Amino acid sequence: WVKENFEPAVQSFNNGGTELEVQMDYTADRLSVKNAKFAAGYDAVCLFVNDTADAETLWILSMAGVKLIAMRCAGFDRVDIKTAKTFGIPSPASARVKMADFTLDSSLMGIDIHGKKVGVLGTGKIGQILCRIITGFGADLLAYDVYPSDAVKEMGGEYVTKEEIFKTCDVIFLMMPLLPATKHTINLEVLPLLKKGVILINTSRGGLIDTPALVSGLQSGIIGGCGLDVYENEADYFFQDWSGKAVSDNLLTTLLGSNRVVMTPHQAFFTRDAIDKIVSTTIENFNNYSSGLRGKDLPNSI
Image (cartoon, rainbow, N blue to C red; front, side, top):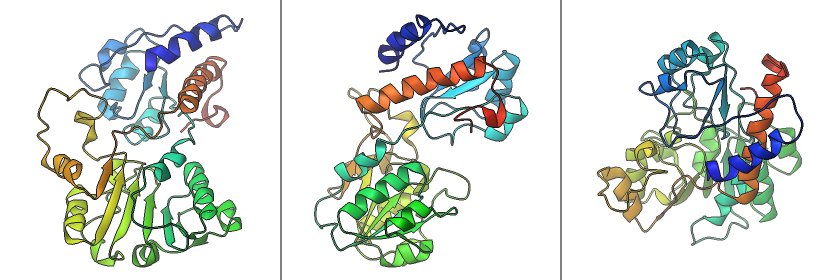
């Protein structure tokens, strides 16, 4: 979808009479320390969810002359932001909101949301839209975020502790970014705290859930069902063609074979509107950087 959607948008932008002319080349390879040197001669690289921009890779990119990392996704957990800033490489992200709809489109059958307690961990832009959808179903909305949102409070949401959500909620949505503080939010120590039969939904980042703990919770019945669009070890499998090969990841095959798990390969973002927004925002990021905007003046900068 990348070349198919970016090529006409780039051509249209270049025909628009702006001073900046965007020339974009495409590769199926994922960025890593092994291939970062091939970015030499480019002003920017455009990354997706499973590209790795760790400290060593960023050093190579910096030495190669790369000045900008444009993310065509909202998440940035695989980018060492601190190192990027040290090297003076801004990393504007794409803004997406459509993903919130997907979390309910793929929810598991078995209960009505109306009248149930639903917990949302993470109430940023996408989380707030999800909260609005949930309240429309007549659910009792509980939320947790280190930065509570007035908008969520105004729609009837109540901010409580994570422990309160674990203990009382029938459905829990994980909507946080993947950070050291949020990694493995669902783990073996959390399982005894969960309301028995809870349904977990994760469309954010796979690393929010410790997968062995998830499998244990499903097998014991503590977790009644799970909807996943992400998986913490997805890099080797998602966005790859495995139709003619055997999957050697036992945890992944266990999840795929469970009748209490609905799993999709990181496709929650994949709508026409979202793709158009990713393309337009990425090109806008190029143009803003080219016009001299830096730091806080650069829109979408992480």
